[in-house]
Image (cartoon, rainbow, N blue to C red; front, top):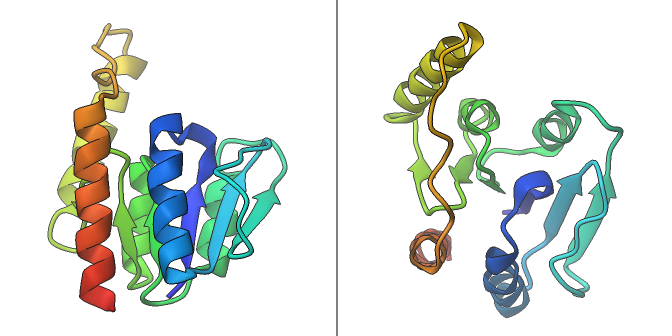
Length: 148
């Protein structure tokens, strides 16, 4: 299993959590972004900078992805593409996307996007907290334990 991190919107508070897991398991990791994003120094981490563009990092991750790999992303369309390749996805708040729930998440995301596109003002995501980071750490640990 390889780990792919969609680095463009990765909260800084998650970086040490990810680095510890990568180092502990010597987990081959790819941080993909359209600008320099560092989660730390490790022989297991490969940094890939792609061209600027809305889905360039996502497309690169999907191209590299194999069945059973794990993607860390808050991007629901990327999570959907990940699940369709029989890989796994966890978001920054610890939500594990599955075949059973990804279409519901995608439908809600698309509905909210449609509402915003019509000119309606909507609330953005709630602020990221240490509680969210803890839920992420628990979900990541649970997943990694399950594939050991």
